[in-house]
Every structure is written in structure tokens, then in C-alpha cells.
Image (tube, rainbow, N blue to C red; front, side, top):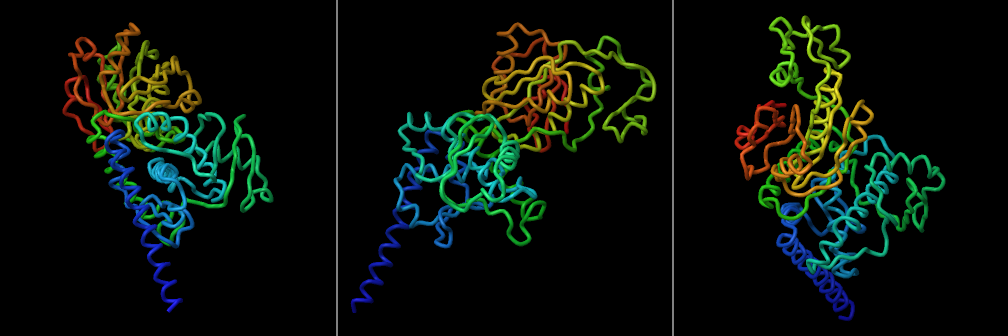
Length: 419
């Protein structure tokens, strides 16, 4: 009888632990939905479940699983931290970006980015909203802010940590890009390689489409309230629809392009160089005062951002012009003036994220007394309506819309170009 009683007690303890954790996480989700609606909506939509086969917590981009006994051993504030941690792995798409990189070092680099984001960008707002949040005892923690994407951090780690020093536990102290990093514990929380579900698989493609759809819906419900994650990504040129910029920009150039010069029938010999060169005629080589405002709100995915940057690269190459680049969401963030080459373009990066409010673009132009010769706004169109008429800027504005975009409000602002 004693053994049976012990077994019953053990079962009851397990059930209590699972219920305790589930209730605690539900309370956290509700608070997030109230104070940080974007993140709260994402947490409510994600497939999050208890699983005792998991050591601590992990994600594969399609679900988040946690060990209820491990979570029950933590403070509620630490459980909240871990759930945010796993959610950000999903949002930053760390689960699909590993490629052929070393799994442990990749996981460390991803944890570095995620924990740094929570500590430097979320902790203050959450605590001031009376949402308890606290680092767990073990993890990968950065001692100061490090503004690098996960690919760059991984490469620095790879260069610094030799194979014999990767370790399987204990504590490791090192410096990455001049910033101190403390690594403790041995848990890997990224599940990358399941059979038939690895990089490029149909399963992964479906998961990414579902995530992008979920993000757009969460953004719509948040309606500009609260913060959204900065896409942790490496900006790069990518495959993108070849827009006929010669035609699109013709109305904004002093020297109009003759009908004989057509970018719909380009010289084929230049296509392999990622260039579109007209068969006849010339265009003005220097587009003065060209301003490009790139949408980086939560509804913009990494592929969309890279496509936007690719279009700016093509404009710069085609017209040999400088570009003023600004990133925006509910406010204009980082601004890069007079970008001259591909390196400068690819080294640009957004530094803030929130909802989406197109008015911030026009506020920035007005407050800084900018008189753009050409104004290019690259977006998915989910930005609401302008508070005031755009006036004379409409004749100078090109709205570049991504796939599956919303164009109702954009139509009133300028010429539309679709990717």
C-alpha cells in the first residue's frame, strides 16, 4: 500500500505542476494581450504545450514545448522570460536560418540575440506595466547592448571558440565584438533537423507562410499599439521582380526617356550582371534628392525587407545615383544619407520597431524641411490612412508594394509599383 500511495502522490504532484505552470503562463499571455497586444496575440496563437520529454523548453518554429516540472521549479517571472525567449526564436525565424552552421554555436548566437532583445528592449516596458519578468539562472547573457544580427555573431563565435572549447556544460566567458558574454548550461532550445522538415522542406515553407499570416493578423489587431520585434536579419540582395524603373521614374526626371528606349525590351547581354540597360536613348544619370522610406513594422518579413533593399540597389546601379534611406514603423528610426555603394546599402539596418503609421514619414519630411525630388515608400500597405492630404508630394511619390499587399490607402498617395 505504501508504494501505491507514493505513486499516487507522485502523479498528483505532476498534475499539480502541469496545472500550475499552464495557469501561470495563461495569466502571462492575458497580461501581454492587454499591455503588449502584438506579442500577446502571437502568444495566444502559437501552439504551446507541456512535454516531459523536453529538457527545459524548445521550439522548431511550428510549436513551443516546455517541461512542466522544470518550469514549475522556476519563479513565475522566470517562466515568463523563457516563454518570451522561445517566442522570439519563432518570430526571428532562427529555426530556418541555421543552414550548415554548427548547431551548438548557432543556438548560442541565437540565444544571445534573443536574450539581449528581452533585456535591452522589452524588460523596462514590461516591468512598468506590472508584468513580472526575470532572467533564469542559466542561459546566454550579453553584458552590454550588441547591435548585430545572428549570422554575424555566429561567425565571430566560430572564429573565437575552437572545437575543443565548445564544451557541454559549465560556464564560459568571452567577448564578442567587444561585448562580454556569459554562457552557462547545456540546453539547446532550437529543434532544427527533424526528418523531412529541414531547411527548404515543404514543411518549413508551410510553417513560414503560416507565421507570416499570423504576424499580419496580429499587427492588424494591435492597430499600432505596443511594440513589435525588430526583424533580426542580415540584409542582403535577393531574387525580386524586376520593376521597370526607367518607366516608373520617367515622370520624376527632368530628361524624359524617349519611346525608343524601353526597359520592357532590355539588352540581354547585361541581364547576367543583374542590370537592366536600355537598348536606345539615355536618362539623367543623377537623381538628386531621392529619399527612400522602408517599412520595418512587424508585418514585414525578412524576405520582403530584402526585396525592398534589392529594388533600391537596382535604382542606384541603373541611375548611378545616391540614395537617402530611412527605416520607419510608427516613427522614423535610423536614417542613412547619401548611400553611394552596395556595401553601405547592405550595412544599413533598422533600429526600432512598433506598429505602422505612415504619418511618421510625412512628419519627418516636414520637421526636417526635406524637399525630395523623388519619394519612394516601400511597404506592404498595412499602414492606415494619412491624417492630412499629402499635397504636392503625391506627384513625387512612388509606393512600392510587396506581394499580398493592401493598396486601398496607398492609391491616394502616389504612383503604385508592385513586386
